[in-house]
Image (cartoon, rainbow, N blue to C red; front, side, top):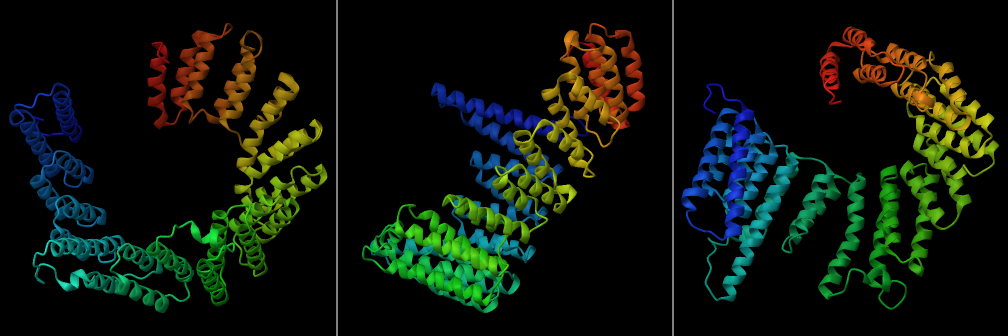
Length: 564
């Protein structure tokens, strides 16, 4: 730290040392119960760390993490004045990130109990970031929190029969009028239905915002009548309104579906019916995939909340299945919901119907790998001819880049259901695929399969067949080397050299680990030639790309020293 040019790492290391020392002192005081000389020890140490961090933030002003470290330390040790100065300086330099302004305002509001300063901070932040949705949301929430706090204070003072003045408790703040103005200004600057819905959800957390909520609803309906989020929010509002009524009456949230079976209460059924009616109106007015998804997801949620044994669950099940079919007929069912449709049918033990649904999904999304996988998994237990035909069809439809999961399932199915000869023919065919990922993966799997079913000779034959057939993976050669080493006496050293040389021709420029493994083999194998290690090192240094040479040399040195 006394150098002319101080490095950031040195500065942070010393600060961390001082922090650790301070923490140890704190723990020792707690253990021993010694409470004296805090001014000379902790206070002096905190002051010293603050000076170090101030010096660091002045030197490396652009490092936001450095500022946050200083802020965290000040919070931990309750350095209020220093924290206020740090926030002020940091925001003067880093005025762009909204998260920093929110952090400062939150501290002022929650820890420093300074609502006015928090509001002023967020107003300044909005001037610097006029299109930040997050800043408007936090400012809106903060105004409502400030109003709620004043209302609570006023209520306590009134109960204590202490007079209050309008200057201390302005009506426009208590009623939420300031928050309403914030919303009006924000809605002029920021568009998007999700922003309005977020502000609406914030307003619903406060019980004095009925007028504000009404205004947000009006804006949503007038500005975004053709957005599925608007319709979804309007529909779900029917249930929330009923939930609010139940809460005020002291009813539990679980009562609606229980009473809906016919035990007497029809209000809940009416709320659900109104919600469904809104969704029906929505899919008629806005027939889009997203709108149908909102409707179906709502029904799925209601179905999952119902007991499987009761009549209500069966009604929701029938309603949901009917909606799936209607959306499919309109060609507006998403791939995700096709899968969910099949899952619902499988839960009802309707395997045949689920298979038909997955077939419809493949026809609707013929290029989707996930759709075909879902369909194939339902049919892998069928006769070999039918399943093989489905796999062939999927391989023809799906693009090469996305084909690998289907190929892996195909090979697993063939291993379990077909004779070895047919499985081998399938491996041979897929290993020569034009899809790079498929070819690489299948070759390695073919080698493992051959070793498992035909032993060393079969595996060696497969390796010989494909060693010149690109593309390759490093693992293909490494697996053959591992198979050779599993043989008696650690394998044939001449063959091991052949395998290493073939692998290095393919990957010698980019894989220093292959060279190191080759050197180790020569040193450790009973028939290896340790004197050849120097030549291999010389070849490696000249073959490897420049960015890999240093790594190879350092690891080779570690190996020579016996540490690798």
